[in-house]
Amino acid sequence: MTQPSQTPFERWVETAHNLGSRSPQSVACPCCGSTSLSVRDVEYGFGHEKGVQRYISCGCCGAFTGVNVKRAGEAKAYAVRAAG
Ligand SMILES: [Zn+2]
Image (spheres, rainbow, N blue to C red):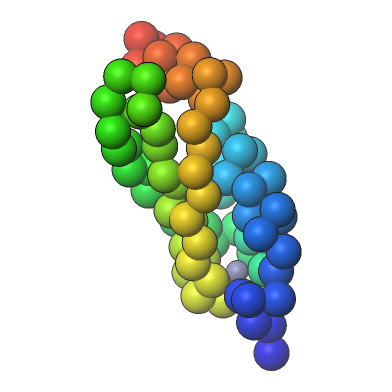
C-alpha cells in the first residue's frame, strides 16, 4: 500500500505550486497519482510577515500535507483572480 510518508516533501511543494495556478482537478496527487486533491489556503500574519499555508489532502489515498507558499508570484496570482 502507498504510504504518505514515503512521498518526498519537495513533491508536495511542487504540487502546492501547481495548485496555485491550476484547478485541483488537473493536478495529480504526488502520493497516489489520482486527481482527488482538496485544497485549503490559510493566510497567516500580516504586512511583510504575511504568508499562506496551503493544506493539501487527497480523497483517494488520504495523504495530508501543509506547504508554505509564501511567494510574490503567488500573491500576484491571487490578486488577478480576485480582480476577475
Ligand atoms: Zn493520493
